[in-house]
Image (tube, rainbow, N blue to C red; front, top):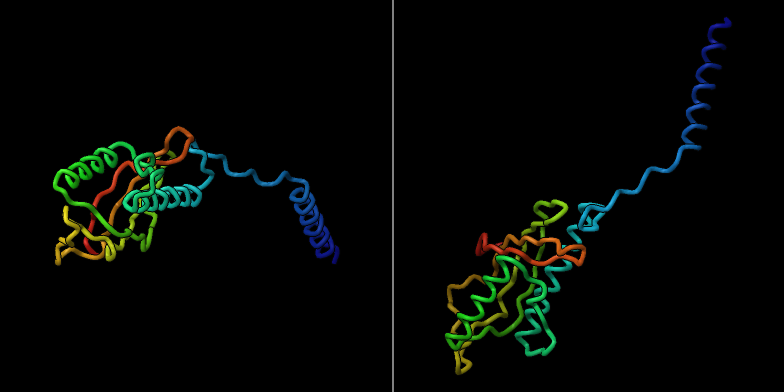
Length: 172
């Protein structure tokens, strides 16, 4: 009969010891920030989305004539080169873009401490191509929605820049 009491006592002592050790243990450590300053993938994608939304807002504002709008400051690498080439071609042809581009959705793709990639669905419904006289020459076959794969790159703890943007589909 003593065995069951000894077993219960042993279990109680073990449970109390485990409880007291866990109560005295230091709290779990906070995640360490990565070289970009992000402590988690969620934080990295939140910053990537914020940066891309800021870029689209600045590009829309620049098209609206806002003097201090600077979408260029949010671009780097391939994205900066391609955007400059596109804007030069548009200006040389006497055309211009008019109307806002709207982000419909953003979906995370992959992340490293230095980069984040996401899929962005852009609504182009209100954006028009105008000729030098202001006439709408938007191709009637142009899709109103585009799916882009957008890569953002860390800028030495100063935030992110859009470094690449590739059209993946004319539907999203």
